[in-house]
Length: 387
Image 1: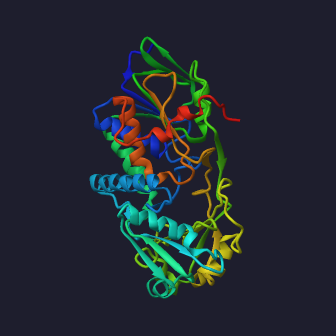
Image 2: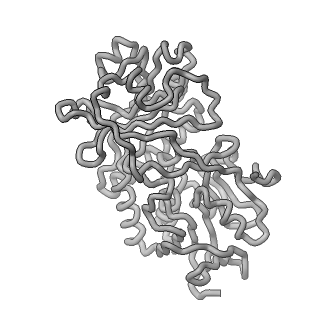
Image 3: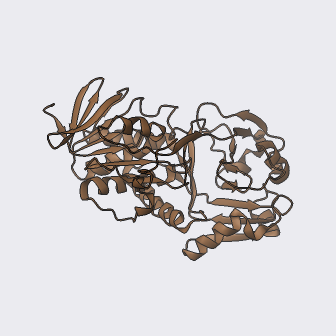
């Protein structure tokens, strides 16, 4: 076995893996970060220009964890001096002609969850919405105040710089061939040679099952499947109207009952207002009149009707890793002491990244975590192999 032994090896260098490595190096650990591609590869699920950061989930557990993660993002921003978070809020919309039962819409139900958790939120009726956010034509709006949009490019550069400064060894374009336990250590055979570590974390998204299959004696397989938005567009407003779509006037917005989400236009960084249309296959939503980005604009965002529409290229065209039961996968790998896996972020996980990194680090170094992650344990799939 190799003479160099790492305290932790992380396989998968997306944002989850990088934050895991970052929290480990803060403990003074000697860390190895491996990836079969490269950091910032467009194929990775964490590749993007912007991502939303919000707390407005219908499940109180996810809403609370998202808020905890936001505090870690604010810490990261202060520590690095990078401008990462644009705190413009996140506005959930609903319109009776589209979803008649307004009290049962995502906007209203997630609003009640935020109120129950005592998180900052504001409610708008049609008149109030028109006065505050005239870009929209809707009957109600529910604003998650402590939310907004993240700049992904400075996140990638700041994380990599921190890891390099801390002498974390980053090996890109390095495929893992076999993982086994030998001599009390975890041996990782790669095309570049063998690596040895006391602990292992796998954060490889849709590649997780391939890696699990390479662990000697591991029968765990995760019910992951790929998916992606139906369409993602940039809406480029005429020059004279661009100011009304900047983050100081336009929040992150969503009409999740019909699969719509959007980000404001960031001058010099994004081509225009980003709007995606995505209906997860496991969402039992009733059909509505909105079946596309253009349909949403026609019905709910008339201020963009004269905007030029272009496809989002490269960024945000990655695949999501959906989970059969729609919960994160986060916990120990059965049968491999000192090892853990994190996966199944479902396209919504980026905002949780520092919390995930901290939790995985706690798990492999201490065997326990600050957050209760029993709900997310990968062992819930141990007896039923993924199809």
